[in-house]
Image (cartoon, rainbow, N blue to C red):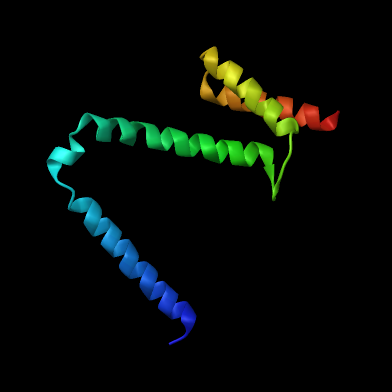
Length: 101
């Protein structure tokens, strides 16, 4: 068996064990307020980190460019409660115009 298959088998067993552990958590732990608060905040933190990496990272370096300007425009429009599609279009338009300058 090659090392690739060994890695695949280890990943399959690990994923099954993680899924089983998640399903085995007692109900009192899931109903705890701090667990609910963490479950609400973790996706937001992960999405924020993903956006930050995609906007200011370029390989191993930090780069400030038109993407950051587009993100700022999107944040302002989000604060103004502009619908999603116009917000995305405006942010993309601003980023594209900034790249042309």
